[in-house]
Length: 355
Image (tube, rainbow, N blue to C red; front, side):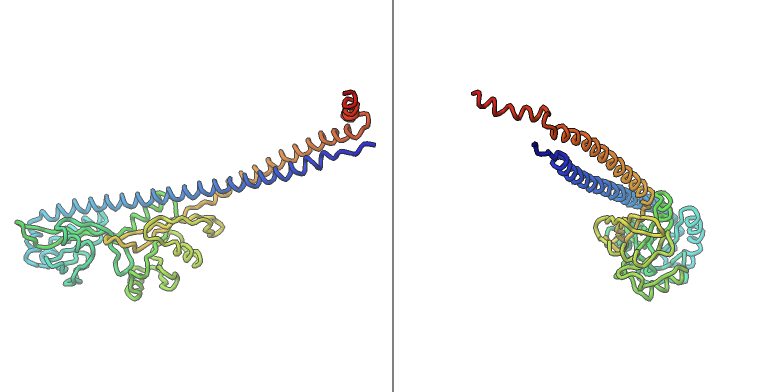
């Protein structure tokens, strides 16, 4: 009586276990590769966004430099600046400001004396005689040359400023300053990159009362207590949940871009990239948060993953069924006493005895 040989149990069970372990490990690494690729995609887009903004600011600065050079060639303006004649300066500069505002989106136009005391705000002539201690003004004073950069105002708005020291016969006679708010640049980036953008200003650089008054003047919604470390001053999406805002606020970094996945909103899946924004003094005073809609990509990846699992499962079970049949037949063959296998086994002792 021959003992039945269980090939299925000895072969299929280890094969099944090893197969599913390999399958699970492969799925894990495949998911990691896809996640890393998405992270790199968002990271690269954020870097492209950062480079675009820097290039746009540089281009605007160069345009303002050309305008300042042209203004500084007007002898009548220079005479009025040298004489400190506010009324005459306003009469001469008002048409220039109107043209620059329409053509180049210039929103600020100043004249300062040699001590950086404001002589005239062409865009707001009722306010004057205050000391200008912004980084751009101090930089122009220190270098004696045109100095440009982003400045954070007390209202929580960013203005790109260029300050030009006016020198006549080797003698400083004052400063001319142009500025433009950067909202248009951010709106352009929003359309160009097809992403949602949020601008967060860090509270440590603001005075709550001044900022709230500024938001009222600009007719913008505001809530100082909404976030722990920052305030939201601009956004392309409305009705953002506070927990989402706090989540991206925690990604604040003063040196590098931070990417965060799984930001859910209105049934959509976003990945966020937090881009630090530096002012003219090199301080990281704000964060530009880019929200990239990954919903379509995630859905496509999910379908591909399900298809991969379905095909792998179908192939695995087909192979399992094939092996089941083949091994079943082998077991039946081995179970018969007259099988060639047992005949060969019986001959072994005979061969040994013959020797």
